[in-house]
Length: 141
Image (cartoon, rainbow, N blue to C red; front, side, top):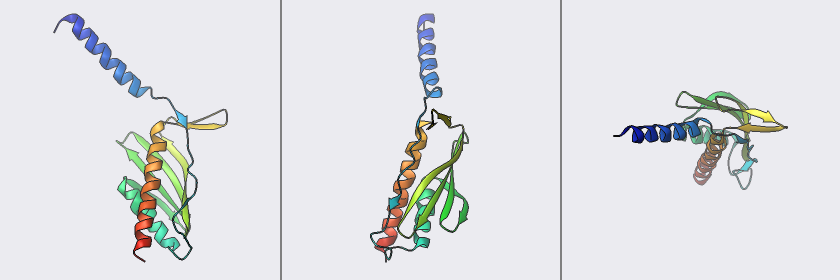
């Protein structure tokens, strides 16, 4: 390989890896409350909690803390990124809220919470998985 080709290949790799490292932040999306039951009799609060734990486990979220009406989950990606969320719940639904993160570029800019774009994707996946689990639990009643 000629010297020029090696330099061009090195430059291309530097640009690709540099762009990946310099990923910009986006507005942190706090999902709306998700309804999981048509009627309060469809599921119990304990079943919604069970759906949260199972749905989280499907995407490698782990339970950090539990209390009545709230579960705290943590997600660690490649021992590099960490996200913690609180999920409040009752028999009719749940809501995911940001708690904190490590290496996710979280900051508040002009009153708007900004974060690495993967956060919003991870939380959307978590929310869908919980809804899927709740639907499955309701179907077994």
